[in-house]
Length: 68
Image 1 (tube, rainbow, N blue to C red):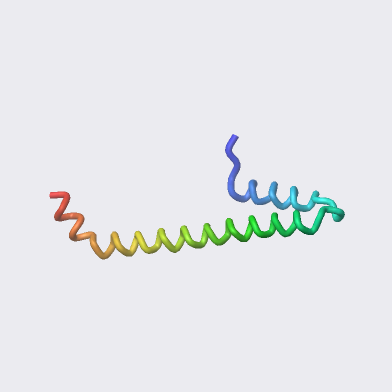
Image 2: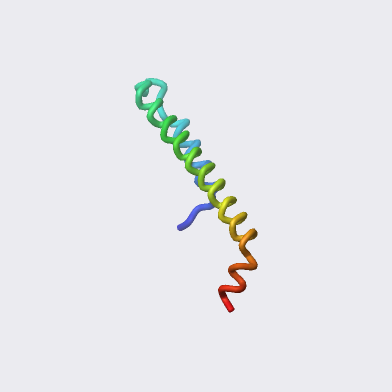
């Protein structure tokens, strides 16, 4: 069963809330670092997607001629 992004984020939030207060600080730092890495990768992918869209838009005529 596939879940929506909203459902997945809600499950992640619930899982984080269940981490006991006694959890080692290092573990929490690792989790935070992982989440920050994921957010950075998402932002980079969005930026790359935008670059590709711009390149395609700029070269649309060239691509059209190549396709002929």
